[in-house]
Length: 156
Image (tube, rainbow, N blue to C red; front, side):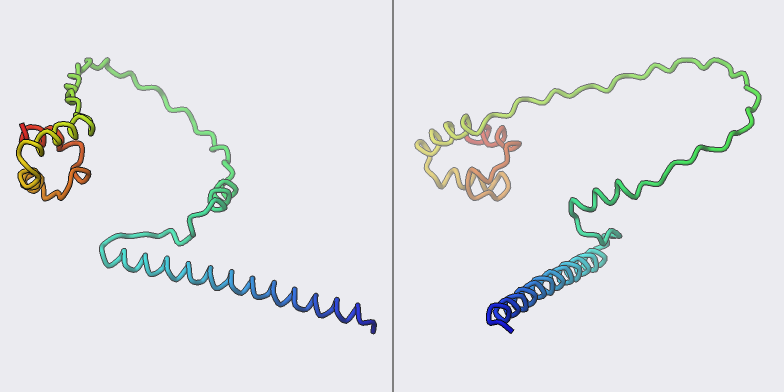
């Protein structure tokens, strides 16, 4: 055999070995993901949640679902039953539910400017106490926007 052919055969063997290693890693990864998913399902069962879908959440799943749609067969023809004459029903007037108007919540910038004024007049400790009264918040970014009106009332 020629040295070039021997070198080429050795390179091909190494390429096959590398490809095999990649396939083994992918297989182990798939197994690890499956085991992790099973552990999540079992933990869910312990907390009273029930899951049946064991397939991974991937794009290929959507394609598989589209392909697996059953072919609709035409329904067998039924004999027509004689029509029954119904008495006209009286219309029931339904009251439309009252739409509650939500008051516009103040923006973060509006509240922030008033908080700066409050801190300048009363100090940071007073503001910290108000945050605790609102729900144990430690700083302004932690306060949800729904609490802004209440916060403004307390600092006013």
